[in-house]
Length: 258
Image 1 (tube, one colour):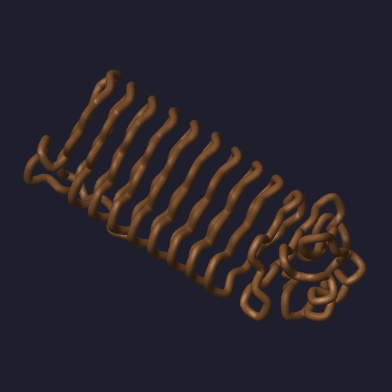
Image 2: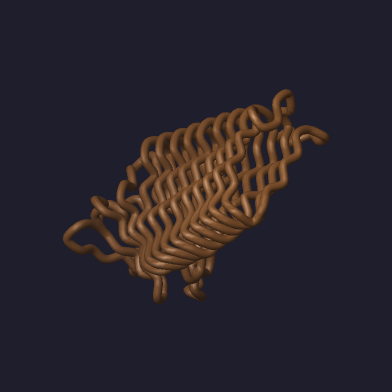
């Protein structure tokens, strides 16, 4: 487990107005800081060390800096960044932008149309409710769009991607990626399925279909002008650039029922 902020260190408690916090200058010599503001549009630079930041209500900019940081945005349209280190960022309600940068980061959104970028490292990203853009970056990432019409991209590395509920667009990028689908996922489009590298992972008995083996999908596969479509009750998976003939001929290689 990451060694998050060890207190006592620098303590900063702001006001309900907009605060400017530059921890390395405001609290010289203290590196593992606890910083909390309450209202207003805040700008926070946590600086060196393993920091905990509560940005409070309002449209905030909060940067963790070097170290393993915890950064919370609460309500508002926040911009949060972890910097180098294994960071946890949580945006709260609002249309938030979060960037993990280097390290194995966890980025958690809430309500709102959010943008999440993991950066380098093995990251976990969850867009939650809203129409989100979720991008893992380099590394073996786990990225989910949550509820809403999302765009989810893995980047380089062996990623696990889920659109969640809603009509989503999924792109794995370089590396052997796994695209997961559970009951009620919606109508999703996989933009870059690569035969021999990527896998579709479909929940057993999805939508009450009784499907427990990939061979049972053959009758549910059709084609259109740009690829193939798997129909699973009210939900559909579209594979761009993969013909129905190719998919039916390689069901066991392309699809796992879990």
